Image (cartoon, rainbow, N blue to C red):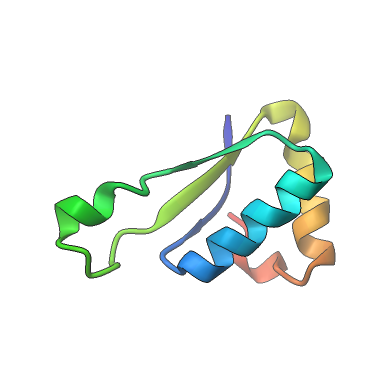
Length: 72
């Protein structure tokens, strides 16, 4: 799996998640539970990972949605 984006903005992660779900692109959001370790202050970013074969399609979808500056 390849990192597609990294952010500590839960709204951004949720939006990207919805876009990829709608497109049928398998992905994983990791590090969500790190907030417990950090005391829930939101300083540790969450990462969205996609399969190597889906990476370009996922990037295209997020770029078309205006999220180019957020991509890893």
